[in-house]
Every structure is written in structure tokens, then in C-alpha cells.
Image (cartoon, rainbow, N blue to C red; front, side, top):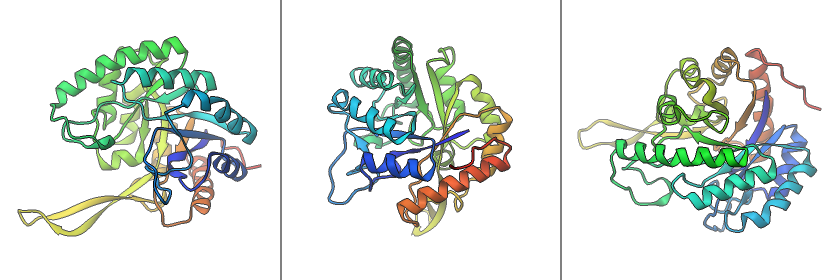
Length: 300
């Protein structure tokens, strides 16, 4: 098992700083965030993130991405792309960039639900069956282009999309070549929407289980009540050791299905300063993996 960090979760660091600091802490790899974003006065996870490579001009950035990654000694666990499956031009570009970098796999986003504002857009109002069918048609094209480039396109299990659960992702990809399409199973996202017991969910994905993201969340009761007088609950990101998901149980499920590839941390909690957070996360993940029976390389 190898460990990497998705740079959406390292907004304070420039690419050079992120690679240098993560390599110094002993991480095996890095998953670069690739998207155009709003600029802000202070860096944030989703806007003003300094460890993000812009989609605009991505091709010109490839040599620098390759240099920084190689000089740090880190590997690519993949690319954290934001191109949506219905934007064929951008999908083609991120697939080509993934191939050029030797990063092997890249997230290609599915369509959001009809009542979702994911990505900052207005809700489409389309029904789930309509959106699911459209996503399937686009992903058939994505699979063919991924095969052309010799890489793998990844569907993330994510709340607010047509693939919030392992079951929906397996149904979406059924019949497509698992050499070129796969699923990112994400513990934290599933606690928000799409939760299925990890072991059977991982078993269900079978050959489509391609990648793992680990973060954690918890549900908290707000002071509000809805119109009926019922309590209102909201989710918030939590440190890996403080959320509702058991990372140890998750790793044991991964061990049971024989998954022994990349685990990418994307901790969006802010209770601990960033550098301390990434270092302690690596120590915790290594310990949990060892307890689950994985062979874990000791830090240099």
C-alpha cells in the first residue's frame, strides 16, 4: 500500500512547497489538483488554492509538473481532474496530460444531480434516469478515449452526483473495460451520501475498484429546526481520527478484497495546522494499514 495526498487539501502551499514538504514527511506520492479556480485574498481548499495547476494552459504546465514531481522523488497516484464527462474537449486534454506525465489515471467527473449546485452552476432540474443515461453515454466515449491514451478515467463516489454509491458506479460502468475506467471509493464522501457497508461495496465494485480516497466527516445537530419542527443536522469535515468513519475498519475491508494500491488522503479539516496535519495523517494511515494486515514501508 502506498500513500499520497490530493493537493486540494494543501491550499497554503505552492506546488514546489507541497512536493518538498510531503516528500520530506515520507509520503509516497502526490495527486495534483487540476482546475481553473477563483482567486481569493486568502488560500482556500476550493478557491485560491496555491497547490492547483490551472486547466487553462495545462499543456504548457506539463514540463513543470513533471519536474517538480520527479525532483521531489514522489510518484503520481493520479491526477485530480475536474473535467466533466460531457465536456469532451477538456476530458481529452486531461487524458492526454495524464498520459504525457505517466500519471496513469485521472478523475473525470460525472454529472451532478438535477437538484444539485455542484460546480457552482444552477440545478438542471433533470431527473435521475435522464442524467444517469446521459452520463453513461458520455462515459462510453470517455472509456474509448482513455484506451486511446493508455490511461484510466476514474469515477468518484461523490454526494450530489449520479454516482454517490458503489452500486450506482458499478451500474454506470458495467460492460466498459476496467483497464480504462474505474472507481474512486471515498470513505468521507460516502458518510454524506451513498453509504454502503464497505466490504460488500468493495466486493461489488470488483475489477472497477481502481483508487481510494480517505477523509472523514461527522454529522452535527444545528440550532435550527425545519418547518415541521424537526431537528436539522449538517455534516462537517473532521480529522481522520475524529470522524464517524472507522479508517481501521475501512482498511480491513480493503485487505479482505485484496486492494493494495494507492490510498490518497484529502483532509479538509482545519483543527490542526496544515504541516502538522499531513505529517500526523501519514503516521496514522501507516499504523492503521499495518493493523489491517498490510505490509507498510517504514519511513526513511
